[in-house]
Image 1 (cartoon, rainbow over the protein chains, first blue to last red):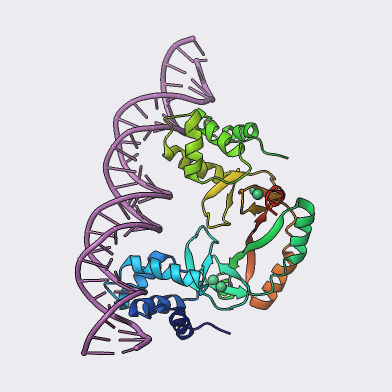
Image 2 (cartoon, rainbow over the protein chains, first blue to last red):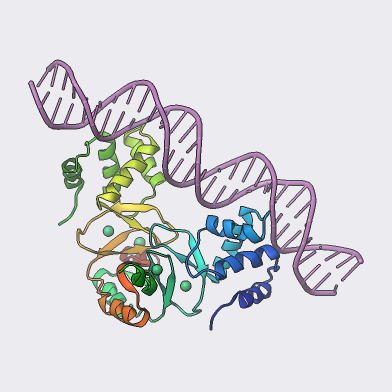
Length: 145
Length: 145
DNA sequence: GCGTAATTGAAAATAATTTTCATTTATAGT
DNA sequence: ACTATAAATGAAAATTATTTTCAATTACGC
Ligand SMILES: [Mn+2]
Ligand SMILES: [Mn+2]
Ligand SMILES: [Zn+2]
Ligand SMILES: [Zn+2]
């Protein structure tokens, strides 16, 4: 079940948020990219079709979308606050291209065996995990192998 | 092979860096903690025994220690710039306690089967990964189960 | 259309990080 | 021990990132 900009809009409304043109523009900017964008990058892009938008609105919108779990965060490559549209609704992780920034999702991380081993060995009660792969996407490999 | 503050000092020297009291103090502060510390937290701690140190020296020292791979970075829990002494020299990952911040290391992440599956399925050429587990450490479980 | 609570953006405030530069210092060579 | 010197330091300013405040505007249920 892909999460389009349209669906996100209706979710926003359902959650009691107003659907403003600013929010729609932020969603558009994020949805239009297959790579992750920082708040500043989102600001620059949204600005083009919506000059006059405030950076503060970008931050506020990102907070809401994050709270609702509608966008994903990427950490790889030193970027610690960069976002993209959440595509699979299930639990999933990301492959981040270090050349072009493209993010590919995957499900079935299947870390439970590892988690069990760690619980046994360390006494830790594992509750969650952060997993990202970095490398080069297929098309970037084609360009310069 | 544990990496003590003393060993790190000699590594620094070997790499051509001077061993200043400021750097030793930063190393001490990081080595004395089993949990991860932000630059500001390190600043506060170092200050106690070394008042007059500049925050800028903390940042510079952290950059050097990171470049040399002598400290580890922790991402879990929204913290994106917090550090701790690198303990295992081999490739390893972290279990981060969400209660007390204690970091437990583990080796043998054994993600190669998963990486192969992803290469096959997505065409991605995986080069590295970011993996962290979050949860509660043994002693925090004892306190409030 | 109206009323109203939510949203917006300018501006200021705060926090985080980097740059600049004159002064100090660690240390290699004597 | 004494120097020479390149590296390191810290104050201050500059830059960048983020949050707060608040008066004006706006989406949307009625
Ligand atoms: Mn995602
Ligand atoms: Mn580590
Ligand atoms: Zn790519
Ligand atoms: Zn704990």
